[in-house]
Length: 76
Image 1 (cartoon, rainbow, N blue to C red):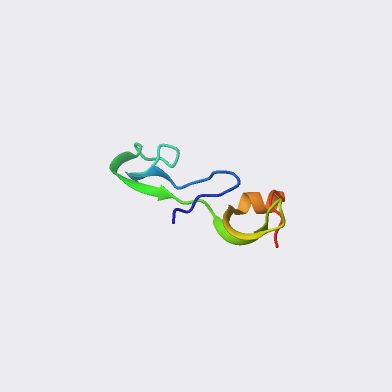
Image 2: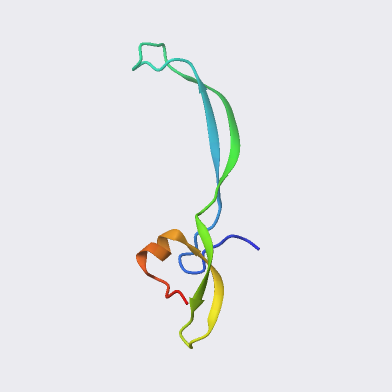
């Protein structure tokens, strides 16, 4: 099952890892150069929690930590 938050809709997104080589100009070097770019996945902090729905049922759903901290879900 995909790790998608049922409340906020947060889902894994794709991004890059950028490898740089060299000493920065700020540190006294001649600057950095990009040597490699590879793909990576940014995964949201989702947790499976028991939640009480509007009609009183208890279900287990994936909820992001941000939604839990904000109080958007009523835990069972």
